[in-house]
Image (cartoon, rainbow, N blue to C red; front, side, top):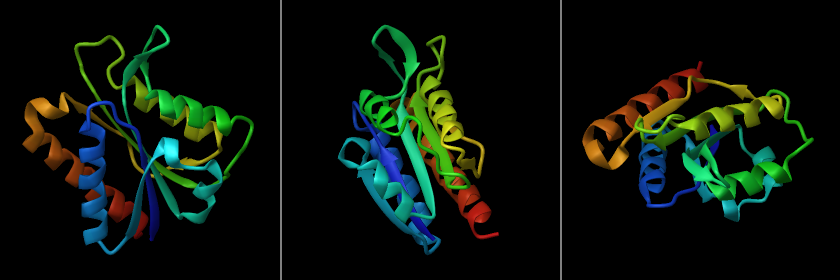
Length: 153
């Protein structure tokens, strides 16, 4: 399967997490293209069987629990468009000490819904990625394995 993994990052955590997911899916014989969301034209999504969206949660323009600012711009570019049936998956990094833990995941799920896309697996929320990187890497591998199983059914 041909997969696009779009990510945004502030402190490299989401980049590292995206690489883990990509490596896992590649080991399952998928072709994965990893791109920064700000370097992606929305028209590129059509060329892929599945799109994975990955973002940290942040306080953006005074609103806690928002996706990375580059995702906000990307989402605006796709306002009013639809991609009925397009397969999506979402994961995000956050900090459970905030009121809106991994709020970016919720926002990206709303985005997929607005596109009439399909979330093919439950979204993953990682708490404090750098505080327990080994455990969180295992969570990412497990999630990607589950995604693989869903995609190959």
